[in-house]
Length: 118
Length: 110
Image (tube, rainbow over all chains, first blue to last red; front, top):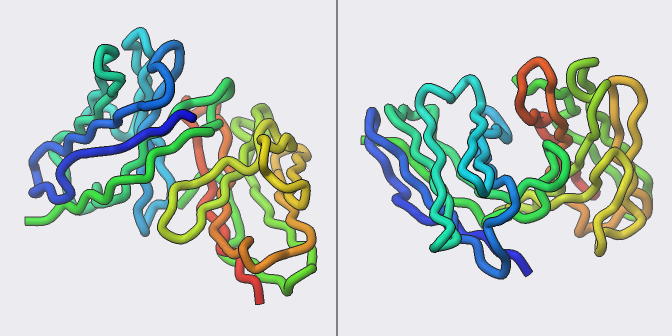
């Protein structure tokens, strides 16, 4: 059974960089798309971006200038970096595996709450 | 506000049938598959319906999905207390070039 687990700091200061890693167990990174999705009280579920096992990426245009996704196949991990964070970036961040169709996420991590505050 | 429109709340009594709507446009629901997710308090969303009306293994047949034009619906029959959760619709948006979600519907079992 595929399992995903997010890890990273739960508190980030404004203007700094949010960094999260998702570790995949019970299956391989290849050949799938892996997404980051966040959920805040004010904006519901928001897709941040995805990375394919080859390293190619797609980003939400509204976040593209601040987001970088990467992966480490040797560790079965993929990561999210979000720069210049503000309080509006406070959310629960989920990693998920994409299914055959866009919008289809069968496997999710448990979520990581990240609070942006000084 | 969300690209897909859902009612913020819905309710029903045990055994009843409840439907949750999801309204979009030709650039999203109108031309793409719709997915439904159930989110219990404090947990990650769980895929409930894929490709408009298909149930993943393990999802009871009390849950069904449908799509017509630029709208979709999730129906829950034989409502049970454990169905109390938030429900989200999702699809791809061709204009925005990204997946989009509804704002979510909080289902209360009275």
